[in-house]
Length: 442
Image (tube, rainbow, N blue to C red; front, side):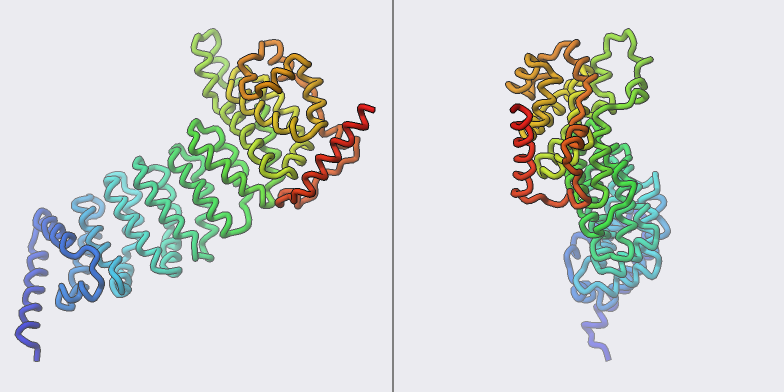
């Protein structure tokens, strides 16, 4: 027989459940407020004690009401928070299974795609998905099998709240860890996010891609084109993350394509540069318009990225010499329509001149002694001292260091050139050019 105390507890539970069943939206909202206030952070045994071993009876009512009202958004944030108390409780596996059995994951994912739902409510849905994903591999697989990656990625791209977007990043990061069956799906979803219009989504996707790339170990063919296009951004925080990812990608099989792509961006195609011409002819606002032409932003970012890569690894700098990077940097320095392209190209070229005597010789000859001395004295500010004639000369330069290297018998690096070069190898290569330079002067 049950004790009087137990009977009283059961009676309170039945009364509570009856109050919920008979309550309208306003009354249920108050019930949820009290539940959240008194039960936040409780363990599963504590919840069972609170509900006289009948906590699941309340959870099933919450999940049923969720399925009925989630499309309207009424009390959705409180409802999701209440369900979260059950799912995040210590030893809550029983509650989790009960929630999943009634299609909880599909409901949460559908909430993300509804335009009528408030951003704050969608954030709570993401938090619940985080809780589910953190429960183990099979739950991550369940989210992915429910077309979760697509729904989550689309929400990240469309969200207007940076705080919410950061929560989505946490979820995607969780899905890429300990999820071998679907980690590639998450990886491809992150790449697909790169062209989106949200700078914050781009930044977070790039950050998570670096983690995903290290876990997966192989690259997707589309990643090079997508990352290079991100360099058109006006947002420096996005550009920074893109360059950080590029630094990682040179350690993979896409290195050659990546370097070639970066060098090609230094000289925008005529088709690209003519896109705005009909709009800006005879317009006094030409400087402002051309300053933000995406292709010029991309040119400046490419020059910066090349400098970062070359300084990090002399073998990469060597390979880019074969790709005619010196010619392209000089051409970028002649782009008087975009001063930052000139500045970044000048700073990167300065490194190549300091590192390789053969480059110094050709750059000096191409610039002329007067401009070259200005370049040596202050490469960063050189763009402010270049006149239109000098800019045209730089843009039309014919420097071909690659041809000289070929004639000198310097072989191109093999497929392992992107691996970290030893200092001894770096010094040996530089010494070779110093020797060649001395012999040429004799």
